[in-house]
Length: 123
Image (tube, rainbow, N blue to C red; front, side):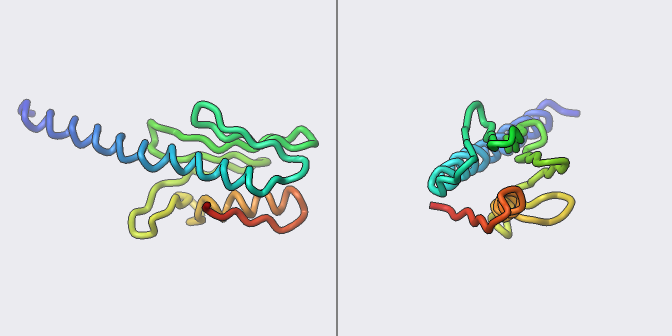
């Protein structure tokens, strides 16, 4: 491998990492803002260190976090985990196994947990 090719690959890797950061961080911030705007009873939402934690009155926790190495947003709720990739043509974070969109997945998980319809919307 020539030095030029190695440098090109390193620059591409840095560009991809920067693009990921530019998408993931604002997405987590937007999610926490939307959750705060709902003012859900019995749910405490917090964003710290690129981790959104939802704590419920019954002690359950849901976690949504940035996973830099995989360039994904991960979510864990109940006994299920999701890994969301950025999909350019959809301009959305899409689960790599089920094809579901991040915001809809969070809304559905909250609705099921709370026993009522919850719809997150971007501000």
